Length: 346
Image (cartoon, rainbow, N blue to C red; front, side, top):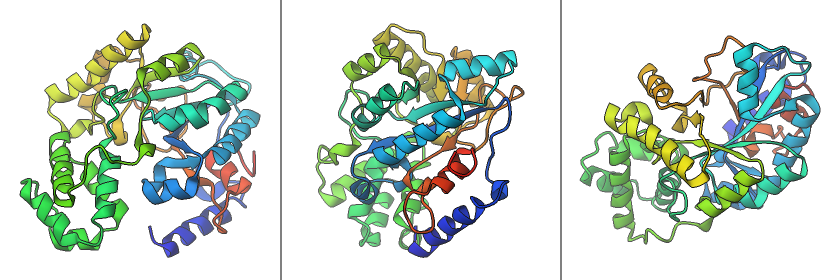
């Protein structure tokens, strides 16, 4: 994202935070269930935003401020408890909030878990089970890193992708897209095609597949079990973090059901919650999620949830460091209040 577009977005958020109705930003309503989504909680935000997709990283300091604001404005409950209230149309004195984390990055254990424990806040983590404990980085992280390394050589990127037989990435397009846009476009491919592109880029760059940044590491099963014992809930994020509507029905069904079975086996607990990778779903996919035995599934659609909401397509507010920066480029309590839906500074 260019500096000018960032400045514009920050200015819009800062201006909106000064108005009581937030100029169209989602606001908390009585009886609502508000689900917040995070990915990576990091110590060094400058390093993380250089080396990662900036929209999935937030500093531990800002995350703590979010948690403190949420605790003041909401009853923060587990996702299971929140769903229970929705299903039974129970009235609540204050709106409910649930914290969720996608992908299960290792820095969740190192940075977020202590904050959650200190503030006595529950949370749910959605795991791509096939990656947990393997040391392998997720596809979107590998793509971002490889494209970053090759960003000054669009012809090489186009040639490497072309050699895989995957169409739609000529040099002209590669040259015109930003690093983030190109990464996003390649992420939204069927898993097999995406992995072919990653292998081709690794070969073209003579890059060792074991040399991705350590910050891309995910949790292992020992840490998952420890967190589970200490009050963190877990759900499924498929086996291989695939974009489900792009896969065959057989592949999608296996990704949904096999992940559930593996997490249940590793934790000895029933798994009932699911998060759609990249927020992508279809009516067929939600039907498979239901048939696999999940009772709740979350999207990346920015909205709060009411008793009338479909429990298999619940909305979430996705947050990163940039989400609550004001026009000066620093954390803004007023913008945080706007994005968390609680007014100016909670």
